Amino acid sequence: MQVLQLRVLVLNDNFFQRAMTVNMLRQLGCESVFSASCAQHALHTLHSVGPVDVALCDLRMEGLDSLDFLQRSASSGLVRSVIINSSLAEDVRRAAGKLIPLLGLRMLGELGHPLQFDSLGRLLKNYLNQPKATEGCTRTDLVADEGEVLRAMECGQMETYFQPKINLVNREVSGVEALTRWNHPTRGVVSPVVFMPSLERCNLMDELFFTQFDHGLQLQRHFLRQGTPLNIAFNLQPSQLSSVALVSRIKATLARFRLPGVGVTFELTETGLVEASATCMENLVRLRMMGCRLSIDDFGSGFSSLQRLCQLPFNEIKLDGEFVQTLGDGPRCKAVISSTLALGESLGMTVVAEGIETQAQHLQLLDLGCVHGQGYFFAKPMTQHDLCAWFHSR
Image: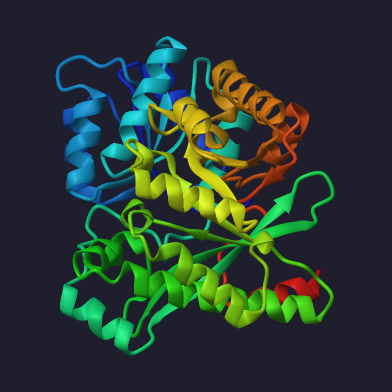
């Protein structure tokens, strides 16, 4: 039996169900398994034995309930991720699943009663197989000091990474997205969540964007010399779209590299376009007139998606990764994805599914008719050097 390097806590007030779950976890090879019949007991146990990787919780609890337990254990760093195991209605479990990441915990999935051995094993293996959060940001991450970020910019520590977009049918690369990562000399690769607020306060977003734009166009020209056209996607912030000089500077940069706008996509988050100014609208129209593609990113995460599609000249929809992550939770997410695919087809727009992390998600998306996707299952963000090596290995 394979030993899973996992510490798991079972929180369930039903003796039989608790004992059965503990037995399943041991059969699955979990290294250390703890159990508790109430939230207070669970907190006491964790303070005694230390943090656990996974808490498997029943939501139906008396007294101090499981949500209180998760809130307290998250704030004290005693639990890293959660599996919900409850007989509550599916919509209640799903809503609780949305709350858990807001507490700073990783939501592995939810399992109803009776607990299935294979389903539990799959979620535990997902925890072990998912990339470590070396570039992620936890609740304990602090926003970087402005002076430190300025020095990082001056020293060239902000590096452009690229994550491939994949044709889900034939697994060919349909483009790459440019992303910035901070290669910190002591902390390793640092997430944008840590440094982006300071960059915005220092008015350095344009400098960062055009450095990234140069790197992306260098990569594109490299691939064109090898006979391979490669669309590069860049993220634009709402504040940048309000600049009257934005488009002329983009146009000048493309001219300097002797590259057409048709090879470039600009991704804009839906939530950042709640109120599009006249300058913003003009910039988007001018970018489209140059041949550039426009993508509405994190589609479905805000409240004005359809209105944005009607008002602004997008030709790509990037479906928020949360819908992909919850594909197996019930019919609602599948219905949303199917509807978005149908909407994209009727509007003549490409739909890209973000956050694909498993083969099961890939196959489910194919069954739904999704053609384009992006996620760690295919490739993580990587440096230009690593991207070229990855291409050659294919």
